[in-house]
Length: 401
Image (tube, rainbow, N blue to C red; front, side):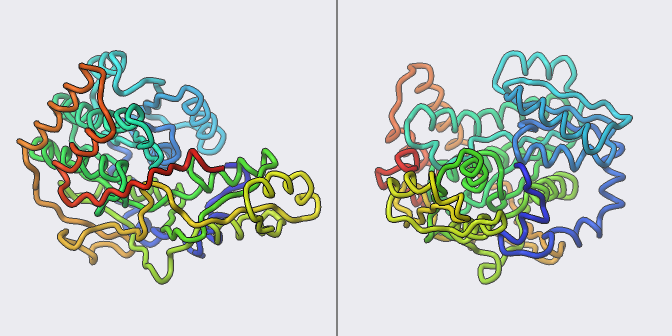
């Protein structure tokens, strides 16, 4: 994210102050005490949120911090970034380029496995991942079954606490990504009777890898037009805020708690097109609104030299776009008094063992036969989530610029 810092992100997403600053200040001494005497395993630790969480732990001098991620390149950059900014700690800091679903990861856990806290930040997070049945099955495997696998391993190893990141899209989900995370939460509830768990639902992480905002950086570097929806409003947090929320939930969340940011619709909702406009202005360009993709691709050859950047702002018509962002449902019990800027959903261990086992068995049978359809997977989701408001338009983001 060249040139992108927390201070430069905040004006782009319509804020002036860091969201959790007061809450972090209030618990800093206790947070430091917990971290310095604890052993941490961070899974998916080299993605945008994983790196932010890893930094929050590292700077508080943990006794042990092991980081696992499937991306070798991202692991390398994580280490370079930490060494170049935070330096070194006395504790055991190591990184491992491993696939959580692999035999090698299992061997790694069996060889060590001694952690107080396991934080799982690995996920397939894109709504577009439901465009084909094969990517969708991998999303189920990563978001649901790898989570349950690492939960079982944590229980066997005597881990004190397991944290797994969720998403705001898990509240009244309309797409398969959000629904997979809601199902993941059910699996967490089942294991919460054997190990303390907590999670967090939070907003879009501004300029995280693969996000539309991260794409703005890519488009400028590659001299390409910027495209954004002008009718979709979203909540945003910075990568550092995402890391802080995850660590707060991990350390201070009680069993089955779900943390979320207290963001208000009238203050914090903003469209992608608005952010694109502010982003370009921050970099010295005025947006030039184009009629279509062809005009945008043509004008990018000449307009930037004139201080203008071609943009295509359109209405959204793709599968899975949720009209209203929300962090909790009407049925969930909230604690809004414990923190200044963090809300807490208080959960009873509500789940159906029979439904979860049926879901597992049917998915395993499909995988064994190496044959399944998207319709079959959607139907399975409906069995667990009868109120799943899946919106299928037949159009996907991969068909757009």
